[in-house]
Length: 258
Image (tube, rainbow, N blue to C red; front, side, top):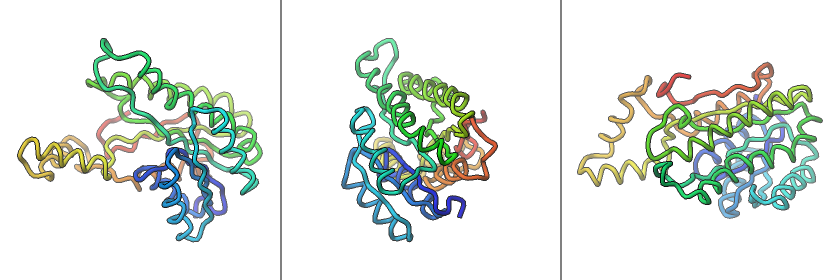
């Protein structure tokens, strides 16, 4: 029960990692405030959290909008009276393609969510996190370890997110707030499984062959599942990580070494 009776806000709650973070936090004893643009998904995850014996508040939220983000903060404090951890999981994938050809307006839209949206929410919760001596966990990506095409614009946003997180760690540390990041690589969940099935169909091979080829270059010879990334988030939000701030924890089964 690493998060017993804590209140954790999670943005970007969907069917994959966001759901796993919420479930693992609830399993660790936390009550949840769940935020995402899609309300139907929020209610599904909220019911799952309640099934684990914890309270859950679902708040449809657009983190790129000042009013919507402020409404999330207000709803969380009205319901629970405190916030102990904020997990910034919301993200957008900018256009995939060569940086020499990328559309600037579409690339800027990626920054609006991945950088400024996460900063907006973080700033709104600073007073509450100061009061609780809480923490912020940003969800980054292993994309920052490589420069493969066509991920240039995505890497730019995640590199900026890491720089922002480290700067916030220095700014908020004197207030007792820790700021850390978790960086997944491959996540073996519905979206990736569908992609591997498409690759397999295109190549005329079994999906397991695509999985095995991908896993062959990873130290543990497998792809992490959402719960493994979520467990790292729970750890960084807990008192076990009370001496850790400004850090980025890779959870990629050994695909990359920091």
